Length: 360
Image (cartoon, rainbow, N blue to C red; front, side, top):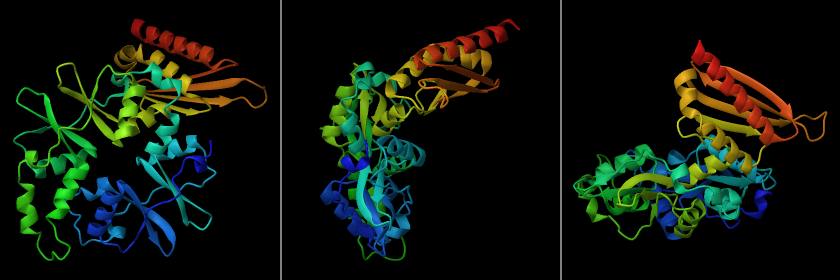
């Protein structure tokens, strides 16, 4: 599928000399978290909500001082290429430009996942399979300044606020923090950091906390979880256990990693490349995961790279290269006409190698 079919064509953009305070107000009014920056009619980068959370960004700075240079897409580029570029750049939105680098659209992780949500891959997974278990929390006694720091370091869309029993009693979003910070930092503020803003940041986090934001159960079907995320237009949601305690965060970029065959292992980093589909991603994940502990403990393996390619001389034939990296290096190549059977063969060879190491 070409991204011309899913990209947003009516794009809000700003000039490179626009003041950050005005840009933030525009993004808030439009409900967007990425905005293209234009210089001499050409798209030169994107300004992200995440970048504005940094302590050295203030209302009087210009868009060009805070923007990020990102890969540019063309309308004829594929969905697969878009996902890979998002993964490589680590950003959830990319501008679409013409031959003269003039902006013609924008594609976000929201647009990609909205069109892919019907894929059966989501029915085979639960939130537990892709949840990010390392995440920051805010306590009721914490300040807005601490929440700002945690959001900036972790680049997270929202932070759970927990009580003394570890249960989620509210959340604070990146948008909430930014609105509060910039409302206390007037555009005409000059010289030393604005004292009013400094004092405001020391206010208790409950000043801007919200209770109505969605929480997702750990055992929820991934498709249903994604539906909740897309309907609320949140890049990440808090995941809770049966006692209402936070156990992780589910992010749209993590789901894209899964679809793109990146970071799909629980303990070992598994990366896929080449000619594969999303059913193959699930197959690889299940096969590698069941032997992850042995691969790590016996072979000291921390990374598995799998490349699938068609053998051009023979119709319907594939070659799979598996490279396991760590204290030991395992390099396996198998060829055949059925990718699933080839992966079984590769796994068997890895198991034989590990058994040999164990005996010796």
